Amino acid sequence: MFGVIYLSFCRIIYGKFSKRYFFLVEKYKKKYPNLKVTLKKCFGTEAILKFENVLVRNGSLPLYKTSMTILMDKIGFGSDFNAIVRDKGGINCTNYIQVGEETIKIIGYRERILNTSAITLFYFSGGKYFMGEYFFSERHERVTHQMAKTILKRYSIASLGDETEFYVEDEQGSILYFCDNGFSLSIKYFNPAYCQSLEQLRSIFHRKSEGKQKPTKDIQGNAVESKL
Image (tube, rainbow, N blue to C red; front, side):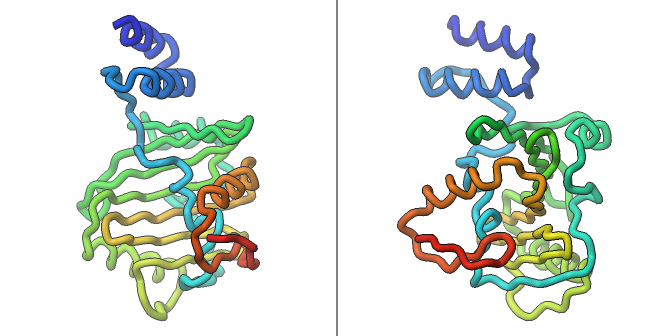
């Protein structure tokens, strides 16, 4: 009972989307699993999984090159957190990822895209936007096909095969990763130049992936020695 009262007080003081409140609730939930306090989290999966096949590229997937600049929602990589919130309005959910001394912040907006429920996510490192994601929690073949077709057309790419999982890379090193895994659809936009914890994240990813066998390249396309 005390825990609920204390966390409710912290929610009022720090805010329901604050880093302080988020980690306090996570701490108390581990200690008291039945504690009836909820967070408005954008996702419940292990955070590092959000970077799978983005931090370390799957070399077996199609990679399309484009001369167009890759952007999500017309927002440039490196944009300031406060500027994006002013433009997008009140956020619907948050997540935080602790990587060494840095905390990566994620904010989300629930939207309707192609008449389908989706969440738009913005990832920040050092207060700067470095990755974005459109996430559809329910898979619809019509939406997958239409989104893939729209993306390839936008970046002046002629499809060469399967449109369920592929990469697009622009001349500035930004990457678009499109993935329909049969259960959900995720479209991620990533620029490594604005991620302060890039090497730490890659290290975590490699450790968690140890023992798996999969051909890989890093985000610049170079071969990586790994047991992925």
